[in-house]
Length: 404
Image (cartoon, rainbow, N blue to C red; front, side, top):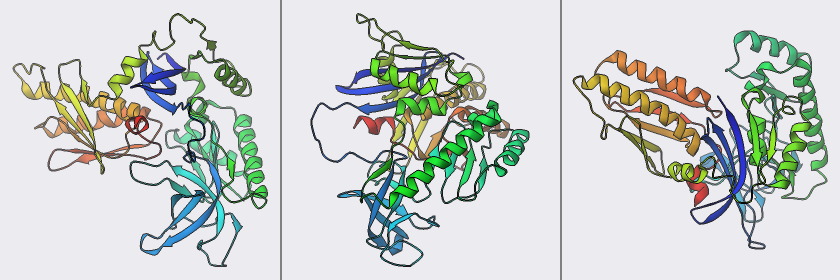
């Protein structure tokens, strides 16, 4: 499958964005957008995912077992206390186990603001590399479940002999074909980086940002297996230089072709029909080749997806036809969830199937389709009302929210 990363400036619905898209067979699979603003100033920047700050506890809400922590003046974020075990304090007002009002401590943005919910923080600091994630509070060794048992066993033995007792580590799926010395080298580099962040924290003022996550166009590279990526294309010279510096410093990425697109008469978005693809990604209705359609309705509590037969012809065997439309819809639903970055509870109303074996085949097919999603997706079961329940981890804003 030909996979490319395209990076360019685009105007979408009258707004200017830095656009990064992951394309598979020239079809958009993932999108990252950053709004481009010409206005000077503009207030406090929203805390970005994975950034690490010196935060200040504003208040404790006992009935929620949570704290609200400011990472900038007037910008309070949500910190669940149930998972706080060994935070890094900069300044303390009490010897109590959990943070109290006025404490200053290191926090990391675990989830961006979603709809009306404030950003979520964690005191378990994570530094993410291509092969491993280093963790400050969770001192265990975790291995991606997408790696087979033999590889998981190998990495567990390898990491146990190399990891210091101050941190934990999670081995990512990207490590599947990585050399052992590359994995260990990256882990040790992340350990040094974490040591540096923690050791210098006490000399930093409140609200300081001690670590900034990679921009979205580089996170695509960090999260994509090098052997699956065929080309990186951009028409932005400064982005091209940053990409080249990042890739040249990493052996597995250094061989990926990078191209600076320089045709001023024909925009980079045109050959890949990106504007049209983005318009479709923001539409409520997605039409299927069979003539059926799916309707995607995000709500405050969940996302509801309805599968319709539309103009498709059921022929002499309606149930066989319904199954085929459902299977086509399941493939498209998995694609749209990833493309639109839908998260939380997702309810799918497929066309009713009478036979139990047809329902099980549909669920199995849907589970297989969501496996390519880098964010965990769980397909649970079919309810008594013939609704399929799914959940997807909430991390970043959905594509529709980025456009608001």
